[in-house]
Length: 220
Image 1 (spheres, rainbow, N blue to C red):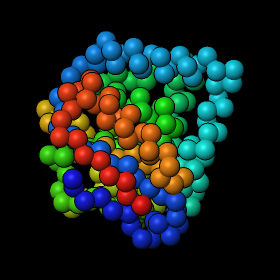
Image 2: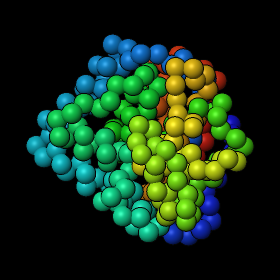
Image 3: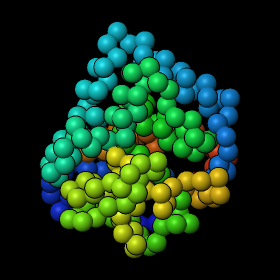
């Protein structure tokens, strides 16, 4: 598996930061009926709660917000992707349907309340470091404008920043041509939540994206 590390300065400010890494060879395909059923079940489970908005105060969501604050980024302006997906579902919208791999990632993110980065390894250069963004750093987010990365927790490879718990970049995004991926589950509340999220993600990728050569690791 590609080397993934956590920057010492980020770890000092966010001592419980932990990453769950899953790499796999995949077949990117349209959303299957089986995956569609699992996505709908997850959405319905949330909207049928007595107080759906209570999920926004779950420990994992609060830990992500606290991590952003510790690094100097306003979590009300720059939300973790799990919180953004949950807010979308609570408002009555479905999770986006993109493809078998992206949809599996989003499903685990909603279930675990943890942000997940997803990268096409063909476009990753060298190892990956999880660190805070520096002054002047930015990239074009997927389907978004240029993202101001200063103080934002992000992933950087040999070419620079390419992903974050808020929005990944177009450079390393998964497309129909992708053959090998790395998913990074981000927990600011310690490694315990990763124990269930990693095997859940592996299972979905095997069943819905024909994943092979799976490998996983936890980085603290």
